[in-house]
Image (tube, rainbow, N blue to C red; front, side, top):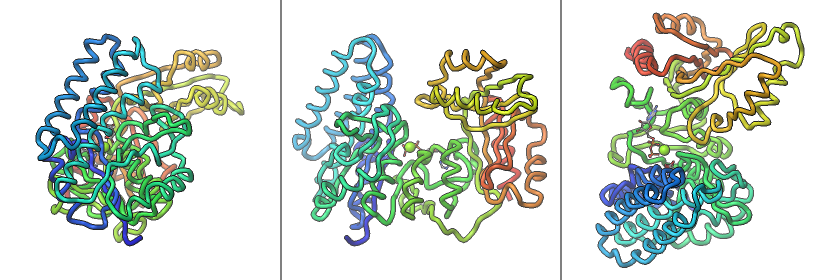
Amino acid sequence: MSELIVAKFGGTSVADFHAMSRCADIVLADDRIRVVVVSASAGVTNQLVAITQHTELTARFTAFTEIERITMAVLNALQYPQAVAADIDALLSELRVLIEHGGTVFSVQHKDEILSFGERLSSVLFTQVLAERDAAVACFDSRKVVRTDSHFGKAEPQINAMRQLCSELLLPVLASQRVVMQGFIGADEHHQTTTLGRGGSDYSAALLAEALDADTVQIWTDVVGIFTTDPRLTEQARCIGEISFDEAAEMATFGAKVLHPATLLPAVRRNIRVFVGSSREPNSGGTWIAREVEDRPAYRAIALRKSQTLITVKSPAMLHAAGFLSRVFDILSRHHISVDLVTTSEISVALTLDEAPGSAFEHLTVAAIEELRQFCEVQVEHGLSLVAVIGNHLHSSRGVTGELFQALEGVNMRMICHGASKHNLCFLVQDDDATPVVKQLHQSLFAA
Ligand code: ADP
Ligand code: ASP
Ligand code: MG
């Protein structure tokens, strides 16, 4: 097949009919865009999450009504709403039945089934927006080809199975038409719906690009590219024209919400270039993420991840003792707690966990702490933020550490990690201090 682009449109890009029309302009302007991946319209996944969390039917139906309102507003703005009205009605009815018969608490499997409706609704609507512009287009159910394991809420994609399913079921369709697919969702081998974790549509697009041997993935969002820091934190943030896979992956891992943390894994494996741009301003440039880049500055960006938990585990028995760390990590691993940063001293080890919903923190059970407490003192602190300076050769460049510490004058840091990665230097501050610290650091490192 000739050059193939997978284009992904995020929640605000498909928030309403006008936003969807702008995305249609982007798709139709480029014949190479054959696969379109959409998120749920902005706000819909949050309402679906609310449905899964409420135990009261009335509260669940308040969230349902909001989803219905967002959906019907797009449907009624279409030129031929009747073309998809029955499909939309069937989806909303199916969701209503799940809500009514879900009991007080939904199983993890039911939760994923419910969360899938956002993308299933928006994909039907966006397909019709494209069809009304005379495009040869079909809505394609991602669950037929996005094969995952059964880890509901944060399923692991199985790329080999995906490649095979894509070549059997999706490639033949692409020969004659474009397809619109749902981001975020997949299915396990028993055809049960799974999700890839919040923000997972970016990852879906990259996985599909890998499975289809596409040349480029485009991530169309509400900012004109990847910035030196979240543009919501400081107006001094500026767009980066070109960035390497390594640096962008570190940014995503350390909280730059513009990309789901796993997005670049498939891109790296197959050397697929990734473009990030604004669906509102498609002609205002954007960011190219690629293996080779011309410029590799010492400081590239600052990322911020709020709501971190710091656990300090202390035991005098650790002094000169072998196997203490492995015992600590064995307990954490058995409780599926994945650790981000680690520092150690003679008799203690400090580690951080992400508190975001669906992340390690949810698994931080009382049982895990109790197990640790059997052989050491455990202190748990909340309300911290992880600030990461991303760049190149940070671990070995002359003067870098001194410059950074100068830029951080007066900042109260709770923990520092430096040396393990050449692409980042991280530290923890109190949540309340985080935004001013990022501003101060950005001003020193980037406002030249
Ligand atoms: P979408 O719904 O399109 O997936 P997201 O809200 O998930 O969009 O991601 C886009 C947001 O990411 C931006 O509005 C911006 O506030 C945030 N963001 C965080 N860090 C960065 C960064 N370094 N560059 C650009 N955007 C960033
Ligand atoms: N709709 C999902 C979410 O809001 C996935 C995505 O938008 O990427 O998390
Ligand atoms: Mg996103």
